[in-house]
Structures are given as C-alpha cells and as structure tokens.
Length: 272
Ligand code: IPE
Ligand code: IPE
Ligand code: MG
Image (cartoon, rainbow, N blue to C red; front, side, top):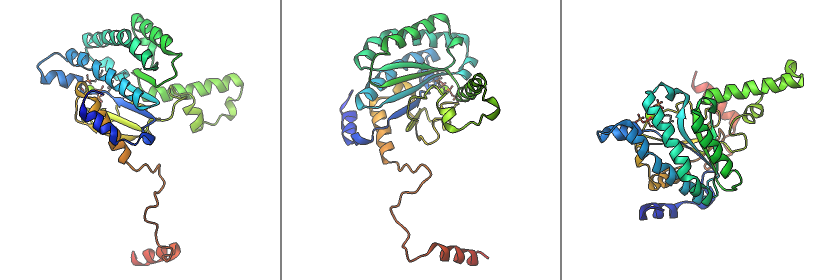
C-alpha cells in the first residue's frame, strides 16, 4: 500500500466481498498531458505506473481477474506516432514488469485481434504470456486491439464453424452458453465492477457481453493520477451497492394483508 489513506480505506473493506473480476477503462492520458502542456505521449508514459500499482493491489486483495483496456480497435484512428509510442510502452511494460508479475503469481493474457500488431510486440506478448502461464494467482488480462462487438461476432462465427464441422448446422440454435464459452473470457466470471477514469459515461466497445450486470464506477480522476486510494474508494463504493440482477431484495416485504389480487383490482379501478 502506498499511503496511510489507502491503508485505512482497505481496513474498511469486507474481505468476503472483494469483486472477483474488475475491469478498467484506463482513460485520460491525453488530457493529463494537455493540462501540463506536454505532448500526449507523456500522458501515456505517466499511465504505466498506475497499471503496476493496480495489478499489485488487486493481486494482494484477492481479486481473481483484472481486465485492463489498453487499446481499442478504434484507437487505430490516432496519429501514427502516438500508436507507435503505445506499442513501445507496451513492450517496455511487459519486459519491466515480468519479474514483478511472477513475484505476485499473476497469469498474464492479452485479449484482442493480435495478428494486426507489429511482430516485435507480438513476440513480447508471447514471451510474457508463456513466462507467467504456470502461475496460479490473479489473472491479468490486457485488452489490446480489442472490440466487444468483434469479440461477440468471432464467438458467433466460431459456433457456426464448429456446427458445420460436426454436421449439425441445420439444427443449430445459439444460446447464452454457446456465446459465453467462445469469448476470450470463457474461463472467468463476468466483471463485477467496471471502473472508468476521466469522467466519460460510456463503455467504448469494452466487454459488451460480459458487463451485462457489472456495477459501474466512473471517476473524474485521469488515469495517470489513479492511485491505490482511488481503487480502494471504488471497492468501497462497490461494497455499498445492492446487486439485484433483476430480482428483488426483500427488506420491506409487503404485508400479507394486502392481497395481490385486491391491489391489482383497486389500481385498475382507480386508474379508470
Ligand atoms: C487512454 O487515454 C489511453 C488509450 C486510449 C490508449 P487517452 O489517450 O484516450 O486520453 P484522453 O481521453 O485523450 O485524455
Ligand atoms: C477507451 O478510451 C479505450 C481505451 C481506454 C483503450 P478512448 O479514449 O479510446 O474512448 P473514447 O474515444 O473516449 O470513447
Ligand atoms: Mg480517451
């Protein structure tokens, strides 16, 4: 833990209700740099340390999976020099953090259409994945060249291809399980908590299927300033939420005296 405040906040957490899967849209690097009169890439550089802190903290808190959005398929629209810097930083991060990931028993995986990445980046990813695959602790997913819609489409096409191979295409009916089991996250629980930094109230094509019932936490803090204290605040906020999954939490049951049928009849009459 980095400071007293984050330690104090951590003590307020219920260790039994730590989110199992945390997903983060790491946004605001450009704005962080702009505010300092620096080039956008300075913001990306400053965004590396919070990644390290988040990974370490989540691993220590017993989070099972942490999925970080690092590059979307839409991010190719950015200037070439910015994109090249992002690849350089990714390689730097993977190389520098590998010992730390192993120390924390973290299993790394990269989610996304990786064939579009420069060969050197793919090699670094393969190496880091290989070197951490025997770990048994937290799963760290980096979403790179990722698109939620593309992931769902890939899953649907995979189910169709499997059915064609098995000769069952004529009778194929898709269900939730057939999609879920063909997503990158097939072996993980859905995210319980989705954090977005920098205040934007949107999901930007991230984990569209998996976040169906995730609790959302948006903070104005820009990603390079996202500290352990902020993460603890998000966890505390999460623990205050009442997750209903479409059901009811029966704190105030309706008195049995009011029969449901009577109530329906009465409302029907009074609304005439
Ligand atoms: C997030 O920061 C990092 C990536 C999308 C790669 P941005 O680069 O989107 O920063 P803002 O949103 O322009 O401030
Ligand atoms: C989302 O941030 C993608 C990542 C954090 C990698 P963006 O900055 O690309 O999203 P928009 O453009 O604000 O929706
Ligand atoms: Mg952004």
